[in-house]
Image 1 (cartoon, protein in one colour):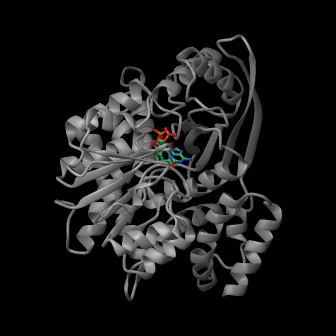
Image 2: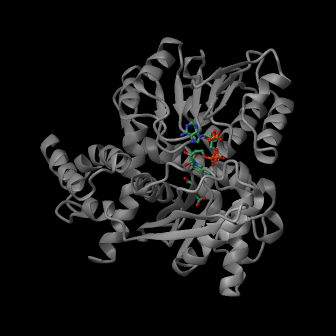
Length: 446
Ligand code: NDP
Ligand code: 2IT
């Protein structure tokens, strides 16, 4: 078996050189899905995984724009249209200086499995730019978004490819891009998700990824006959996902003690309550400042510069910032401190070595493609509401989100139950694969 996996990976590597993040994501899937393919005649011999790792289409384009000093800036834009077997391409846009083909291909690849797990009819895609919104004025961000959409618009559409937010792309950026798309096409359609409430957005979409991650963690804990109540939770990041993961934890009476950004983390031993979280939301979403300002307002908290929060003792860890932010040394620290559950809000935040260590030390571990699928799931619900030209209430959307997260957890159990516990990686990969592979087989060699 190992030999088949190695041969497969060598061939993919040959075709995708210098794409470490993409190979990392493919390796995890190959190791769990190839043994399943070999045991199932309908998939074996169809080269199905090789077809899934090859994007259907990759678009790369120049984004030129003029900054406030009237200087001409040039960025690179991308859209990876990975797989449309079960629906139109769907996935976020990331604006961050680190964005490159490898990172977007890993994200697009994971999105295919994630979207399949949601049970909604969405294929997988991802895009973005190496543009850094940090330190830019609103008008600079607007000019960039307009230039970006002036090229992207010809590749997307409400039945073709429906982008959304991700790192560096929130409601402000979605608004500017939607305005430009509408102007270019002269059509008001649900081409983007994460829209504002007065122009086609869905209630609960801003909260969905963070809430969904916590709903998934609740399922993991219930499976171990315990709950989130009273548990100490360490969260990384302080953006969209981290904020609403924290909010849901607070609502269900878990104690959140950290948040972070790329400059370091804050540790509040008394716990971050609703009022403190409101301060963080204002700080991050309106003032767009650094998390260190938290300790100026709440002096009993500590700021640890250039460190991540995994050294803080906790029961539950929710990595909600970025890929490869939790390493093996961090996993060892978490285990040593008694952590029982690591549930990913971000995409691929744990390194492969960290995952192995957690799994081998009886920590219940869920990969982002299962546990953070609530964001894209509610994007799917936003698309459904746009098609209906109708809006569901907050509680209707929240209930659907919760049901979807419970369903994903059940799929992970169906395909990932092992003698000594649940392998959520295996469960998510196989469950996500089966639906996409069946659709691809039915649609022929395309
Ligand atoms: P935001 O831009 O709102 O927040 C990102 C947060 O992560 C910020 O606190 C940011 O700090 C931190 N961060 C980003 N890059 C790094 C880095 N290289 N090192 C350390 N910290 C970093 O993004 P989101 O909250 O939307 O996304 C967070 C994660 O969740 C990503 O992995 C994303 O792919 C994933 N995700 C998002 C979904 C969504 O609906 N938004 C859905 C599913 C997954 P700083 O401000 O200093 O950069
Ligand atoms: O990684 C993700 O799932 C997202 N950034 C959300 C994608 C979406 O289309 O809502």
